[in-house]
Image (tube, rainbow over all chains, first blue to last red; front, side, top):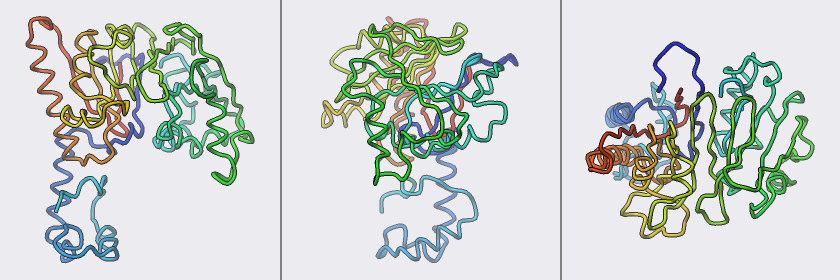
Length: 82
Length: 264
């Protein structure tokens, strides 16, 4: 990788990346974001709607998503198996 | 690429956000080119026309801007003409705007029949080579200013290192490689046209590649699974580098994600 201030010969920007997840900067970030997500929602009264403890409730799930205080991503991938 | 019009490899779902990015660029699609002739040009090189590689194009905003000039390259040995696929994809009632009435200029160009014969796109040279995939697919080797990037998605490894891919990737600065399956998953997916990180690492080391980018992720793999895959790939690469035949070699392993930027 180029580490000088000279303009690069190539700048490769991955978009979509064949089904990849959007925009973490490292695998550590992936874990941090997911843990933050789980910590936040595990305290939420509607968490059972998501985590599989109870019957899945789409309306509760949607409400929960809208209430998320930070940007999250990859929801369907982020939820660990119940 | 510096001094070239923007080169686009495949047009899957990521094409939508690429189009949004391009629309925001005031000084032309490629910020690395100061040549005004490149401002409104895009050159598409498609690996193949399976739907996950073309489905984003109808939502590619620059295609709806009259001053945009888009070049599509196709190889004579492909099973179908790219323009047929693009037209079919947007044919009524699949999509409200048909491909042939796009306001932008669309030009189809034939790639040289001989693989590894490059076409020049500004200052860059792009050469096609075949990869192993159902219905056929191509990889691309792009060279400019002494740097080389090799795009080898939708490539299934065989029982041994692929000499064609080794030739393409020889001494490349970066190799994008299909790592959809874990090694233990692959036996159930033989002939599906995808590969594993192990073969990516072995190919990269044999070809003396500097950076391996793993992509074409399995759609059903969750984030934890992807993180584990990357961790395993790095561990495998470290174990391979310690082998006698790889003495002195170094290999950086990355995992592709939407928005990742690599400069060389």
